[in-house]
Amino acid sequence: MEKVPMTVQGYKSLDDELKRLKSVERPAVIAAIAEARSHGDLSENAEYHAAKERQGWIEGQIADIEDKLSRAQVIDVAKLSGGQIKFGATVTVIDEDTEEEGRYQVVGDHEADVKSGKISLSSPLSRAMIGKEVGDVVEVVTPGGVKAYEITKVEWI
Image (tube, rainbow, N blue to C red; front, side, top):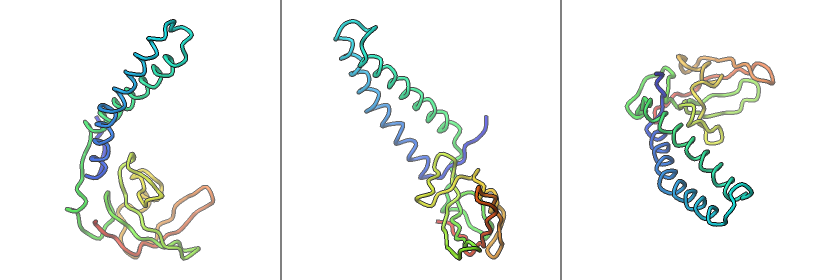
């Protein structure tokens, strides 16, 4: 079974989502199914079918999150250090074409959110940066062509 790397924060957010699904969403959909059943004929009851579909989605989410949590390899970024980029590092880069600065943290796949500066360990940029240090230039193949980034800072926060 393959381990799923994640930060402490990523583990906590998944655990919180699991608790919400089990304690809020699951009971709500069960109540909706019961309500729809009380309306009679189930074969033509759109509310019932929608609630059953929602229940299936919720149960799928619960199973998926439980699977990820059971395979979690939680990495406390605050305990890491060094100049070489690896999982959990927060990296500042400069786009060599536009001189634009970017700041990204390398996180697990489910934690990735580019808008908040978190990129997946399996993303092309992360894969290019892993093992590199400040001063190195990485090239990433993007849909718009090859982009070059200079690594200017590596932090562990």
